Amino acid sequence: MRVLFSSTWGHGHVFPMVPLARAFAAAGHNVLWATSADSCERVVAAGLDASPAGLAGVRLREVVQDQHSTAAAQASPGGQAEFIFPRMFGEAFTPPMLADLLPLARSWRPDLLVHENGELASPLVGAILRIPSVTHAYGGAIPASFLVAAGERLAPLWAQHGQPIPPYAGCFTSLYLDICPVAVQTVATSHIPDIQPLRPEQDTGRPPASLPAYLADDGRPLVYLTFGTLFNHSPVLRAAAQALSALPVRLLVTVGPSGDPTALGTELPNVWIERWVHQPQVLQHSHIVASHAGSGTFLGAFARGLPQLCLPQAADQFRNAEGGVRSGAALALTPEQADSARIVQAIGMLLAEDGYRANARRIAAEIRAMPSPADVVENLAHLN
Image 1: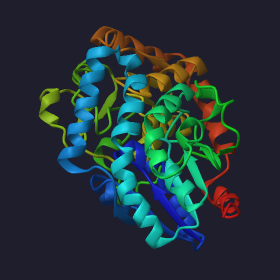
Image 2: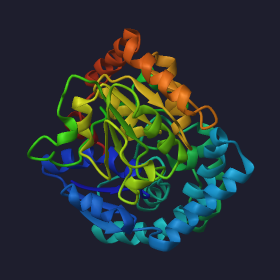
Image 3: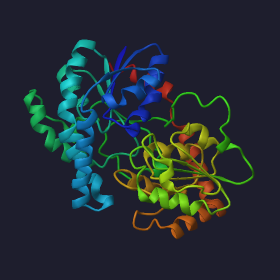
Image 4: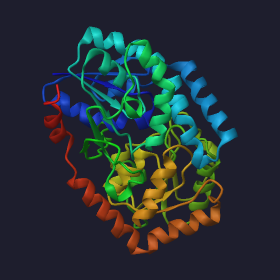
């Protein structure tokens, strides 16, 4: 069986699908991944073949920056996702992705397409070539209204290829792979006809051969602070690092490949600042996670049963934070609320009150009970 994966760009849209792609490969299927040239290296590093597709480089960054700047001028941080999704993931990203993905699919002849929920060219390719197209979540479900709006913007593109656009921009025509545990799901999924739960796993290669110094246990709890690779320049990250450095904890902060460790301040006590860490290994040793609530970190922390402080900055991060608070396993501060005093108070509560950890462990148990990528491969093999 030949399986063609597709994603837009960025860590958060690539890595949630890596475990399933690797499971297909381990089961003896041929796997190819189409994604932005900016992300191909990440796919290849996971041991998978990749082909560049869609926007990349300077043009990609220009589109992303322009969309976020326009949204910031017209919507609150919590409402920017509704503005951005149909315009960026639909109108801006889909035509150039289709221009590369369609000829690639025609030449490679896949039996199955698997696309992340922000990559909306794959459903049209599937309709044109009559190949099943499976939608893979990259976190919690995307609100139906976002996909309806994207579909309205993409209807002319479908018409150019003689295709009527199905509901929800063509997503869910075959199956929806849902990696979000029910405990933290904030979006209704009743509009999705066929849902296959899939255990969220973090697959980022082998950890360092020896335990890094920042994970050495000296009796103090380890707080892991990260804002991922896209929001690592937020002033909230600096405020959180400086505030938490005064607590009786070990603080590990990541600033991303493009981040500047010195921007957080120099000689902060009890603090390790790294550009990149092996996150699954770090989560094994952490007590609390403080982050922007990006889906990878958010679900990865709950898979380890860790309470969280969510400091959302944009997009689905606000929905994730809401789900964490509802579950009783997290606290959240909006960008306007995230000052030093509130951050310190929230971390203190997460460390002191056992209820947060107990609820996080219940979420971890729910995640463990979800079907594994290997289990789901067996189900998907029957779609073609």
